[in-house]
Length: 525
Image 1 (cartoon, rainbow, N blue to C red):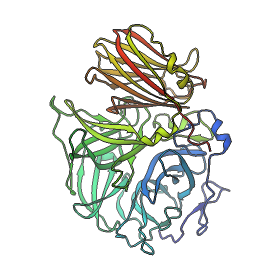
Image 2: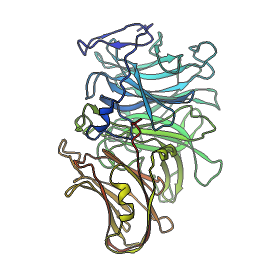
Image 3: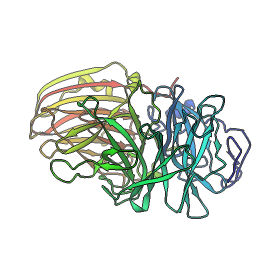
Image 4: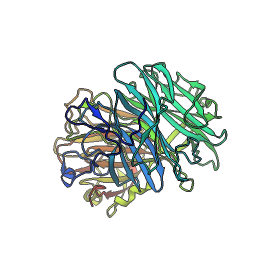
């Protein structure tokens, strides 16, 4: 299909009808002042102003801006008419909504993919000596069982896009073949694509000199969790903590079902990539490597990383879609549906049980903090006195807790949102687990699979366990032991006021140091 239009725009008289209006663009769908007060509207997580959103796509940094594209339905608040929504940020915290970048047209939806800066203009799409932005996306055909990989390019900092007249760039003639993640591989001086072969529980690797012609290199899989289809892969090198200069490669594979808390989730593999194939690292000292999960609660999926973050920054940053395919179409929000997680910086940690993907909230989020409230406790055997930090935890808040429990300790850190509503975090030291229980967190009856508990592995490190929480209007994100494990969970409380409690079930806390900050809205002027 040949398209010479820079931007396509939908005609609203019939949602199934699309027209091309040359270079005209849709008006930005910015958040209005009223949107801040909508029930459960996140205040420091990215959401569309209205309608449906799912996977993050095309994460790329260019000319001072972090670009966030995402799966978007321009016409409704449930999945359909997949197009690429678009926003930019200079700080990963405050986002500017831009017009839809790539619309569904000619019976081809714009499914997930990636974006890169073609610094060397290998594609030839650059203009006036400036490198183009290239989007690599899956075309999903609505009238026949076919998915293939396509290109679009922008010469104006991502504001308008032209679909490549030679599309598709890669086509196997298959029904399920999607979600290309592309990056430049310095050692072999070529582009690498990692793309999901979902029903095979496989990812495929391809190479290209120019982003237009692709050669198959190798495959990886099946491995790890294979209950659900494989989707949204990513591949990148990561620094190894406490080993200066050491790096390993992380291969990310999201799965449509079979995650530890149920439904969709994100797994990862650690090994090496030589420009041709990915080789899984040797098993841990206790034998075969277990399935490694990036998150242990219900609402972290399709996580992908930003391309072209400047070398001086050195971080690998990603975010995920904060929902679960079990109930994503039914969450009780309006006129928008779905949010992204907060952005997170990644490293790798070697433990006696194998590799751990470590996630830490990006430091830019600290700009939302209000005055810190602190408390230090000793010999806690019953309910702790948290009056020193309660004022900071009545609304949106961030909390860090450094705890020294006895080896038999079991205790609950609870966020109360009313007399009968609470979300409980139970730390069970002897069982090496942390349980996030949202069964009584508020509105849960909209889907039978929403309520319930999720368990994450936890361990004492030099006698300590550290918890780091971010609580927004409709979510809780928990980082355990400096990000060694995470739990991401949607919540729909009926009350806005919150109260924080800490209570022992057995054992004691020898010491506890807790710091809390109220958080401002990232959307307000």
